[in-house]
Length: 94
Image (tube, rainbow, N blue to C red):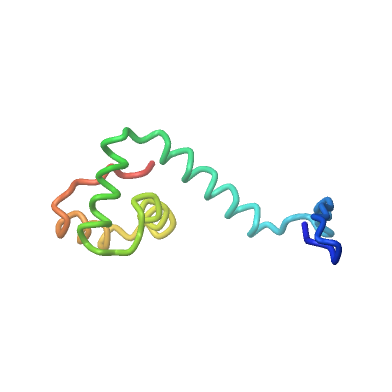
C-alpha cells in the first residue's frame, strides 16, 4: 500500500514468492509452530513462571522468548542457573 501524489491510498496484492521455501526455512517454520503450540499447552501458572524468571534476572526477554530460546538451545546448564538464581522451577518443554 502507498499514498499516491493525489493523496489517495493505493492497495496492491502481494506478489507470490518466486521460489519454494528452502529446507532451512521449512525447518524453522515448523520449529516455531511447534514451540508456539507447546507454549499454549502450558498452564497459566507455568507461563507466568517463565515470565517471572526472565524478569527477576533482568534478561530483557519475555517468558515466551526465554521458552523459545531454551527450546532452540536445550542448554541445561544455563537453564539450571536461571532456575537457581530466580528460585523458580520451570516447566520443561517436551
